[in-house]
Length: 300
Image 1 (spheres, rainbow, N blue to C red):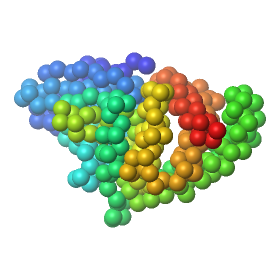
Image 2 (tube, one colour):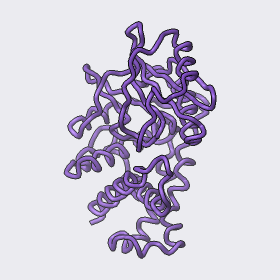
Image 3 (cartoon, rainbow, N blue to C red):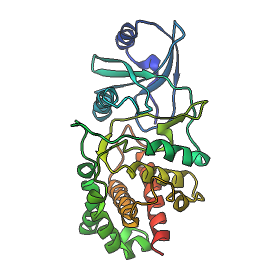
Image 4 (tube, rainbow, N blue to C red):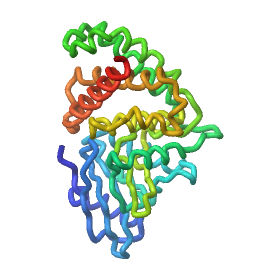
């Protein structure tokens, strides 16, 4: 995947962002990671201020265009206690959307930082007022029936033998996903290492919020542990389930998350990746393999 660079964003759009910021861009450094073909740049302004800006053209990726708009709305509504960079400017012009955030000088966490990340996720607040965010249970309902659709489509014979042999168990576990994920807490719903930043004081920042919803307070932590396993297959993810925020989560609820997500990713892999997101299917393949491998050990 080749990201759009800041220099490739139309001049009129770049100028509009500068007007919104009340400052001029002096330097732009494109940031790797993620799946979007849009731009993701750390911008240094003439005043010395720094911002992080992401942009995309609707004509190039209408889905990402809408996600950027949604993320700006979500972040503006986050409770003050949430450690997330805030929106400083948005621009919609000539079919483009640009969202600029506070810039956080930090690094992505490694496996050795897992407890620090779990501590931060445990602090995501309960949503006590009416929210425009969707319910996690509703968001995950399609995932809960992926194995059933795969079976009906007759593609299960192409799966590895363990998966085929445990298809009924995977289907039954997945069916529990919507109920298991129900809750009243803020959920990020995309907890991978590249969506976290650790600053010099070890404060954990959570970025990329377009999928935010309301659900079980432990859901993000389980999915983050899955990402840890993808990055380091030797990680003791079962040991991390003893974290204070996870020790009381029913084992069958963890199984439901792993089975449901594995089914969703396996189903997605039956079709080609979007043209401007060519690495997406490889990511899904690795995540599905890690989830199934973890279940294989849990069910042994």
